[in-house]
Length: 463
Image (tube, rainbow, N blue to C red):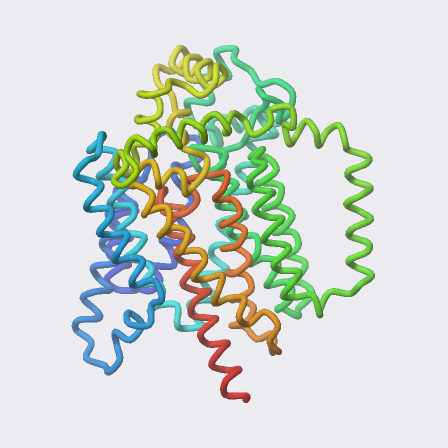
């Protein structure tokens, strides 16, 4: 009932306040399912996103202003999108899982389409500011849910919150006696936030974090900077509770980019204090860090998955098995990558009759995943997707700057994309394989492209 009422409200908002409907959709993207509920809300999200896109197209067609479609020609990804779309059509005909492929195809085309919509809408600084504030507040909300989940499950603090913040699958799993062991050990609890998998939580929060830091360098008011610092800590806390090592690798690269761009504004004393603090933290919590980063696991059986993925690529190097079919293809050929994975799935099926573990089963490498599902040319195109932006971004690395709003957005987007790129070598659902992650990724990319364009125009005019 609530979901139906909200969808009706959203449809009305789309026709009367189109831009606010877009901002609301962006804020709701990370909610793959409501906390405490098991039903996925993805189908309505697909329909509402399609509705917004069609409304935008109609508005553009009815408008007769000059250069109304200029942003389409200026999109640097036109060639890659066309080639990738052709590959999707070609590889889909040989797919081994038509239903899985259909969902993946729709997800990819929606995210591709929204790059054009976002490039148009977020040319306005007014909407860019509001979009950044919304994604930060959404990330904080998701982080709070993730932290509460960890406290409730791992330390049994506020157990009464279980029904409100844990999905039914996890509640049944816990009530049946299948508890969790030492925090972040092989059997330790890992928060999922509002997603269905803890790795998705870390990917999402890691993408938003650079904007919080970039805003700290831009905003002057002490109260706002204090709030942003608190938000940054909460988001890091959410990533920590996900137990994702890839999330911290993402942060490492993103923060390195932020340091490079803001190096002239960071006092040397602050850098020294930070380094000393990190060293002391490592020394004091050495054993805990070994436990947290699960060094005894190595790469968590990813080496086995990667080796078998290469074998699957050899069997079908040019068209793959079809989008969204990696898990089906892998298990069909090799079974489960480890006994632990098999036991986890078996335990979930025993308790609740189904398993969500397989939903997040991928190649744990973006490019290998695409090579298996769509062939090697798709992996090359996806690599070009990142290289194209990074190449443009680093052209302004050592140029003089004014630290204006466009530059702040550009730095945040660049740090986020480079962190995402580093993460992609250890995770596959990093951009277009998931609707929520894909829309946020495209939003960040579009803001980066537009802000980079504005920044370069300002620099050219100053010369």
